[in-house]
Length: 192
Ligand code: ZN
Image 1 (tube, rainbow, N blue to C red):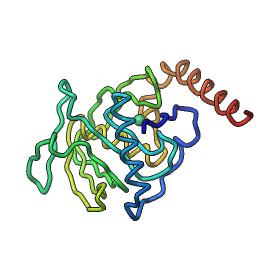
Image 2 (image 1 turned 180 degrees about the horizontal axis):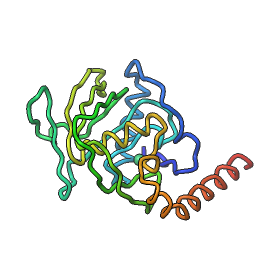
Image 3 (image 1 turned 30 degrees about the horizontal axis):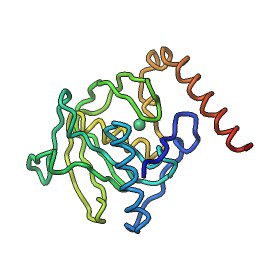
Image 4 (image 1 turned 90 degrees about the horizontal axis):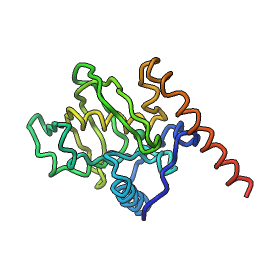
């Protein structure tokens, strides 16, 4: 089932996600719905907060992105990215493993808004997968960026928080307009 994607201005995007201790049928269903929603929106990542659930769960799939390279190592060995997509990360812990690099980012919760964000170019990730198994990965390039962007969501952190103050200033009219529209919509829903 395709779920509505929550936009900037909805308070759930600022909530820290609760840890998931067990893969219940409800969690499996949510993972399936999040994947369907991400593909329908042509996104490369989606966090539970973006479908209104404050949980430590995100899905990522960058295999169809051709113009921005990614790397993946599992157990210290290079892995074929397509074999490991989509990536389901539950309770992910992310540690920087490379120098900061700037790159363009967008977010399904911020339609039409794109900007450069500086993040470590590679990261080490420990997480639980959709089968409840612990996975350890080293990600680079676009995949590292996606993992960091999505893990931020799980802690209520948004990509606008990582932008330079000049960039955020430039985007302020668009961000304010989006936030106002979303808040007005929420008020209307609550009143109806
Ligand atoms: Zn996002």
